[in-house]
Image (cartoon, rainbow, N blue to C red; front, side, top):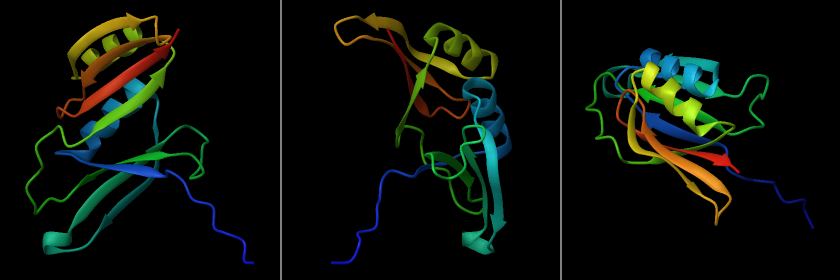
Length: 134
């Protein structure tokens, strides 16, 4: 019997208004680094994207791809909720505010689930759930 190809979650693509501005937000708030930059296509298919991931993680770890199609309208924020596990929710919220983000729902502990959670928005208005394990 042939060996099955292993598969799993690999990436999330988020369409944004300005890839450079959103790169700065996700780098400063979550420490993600640029893995690759892609600029290609013409007309409706013109694309500018940055592939982000953890420092030294390579492509074996899940990545966040922020992309812009300059010749297409930008979808309304809210098409997805990104989730990050962080070591300090309160510090992450402060960092997000300093980088042009906003608070959607303040941090609150949920001891019955062993977590502290806040919902923030990036500088483009995309929803992010940040979770600290208690």
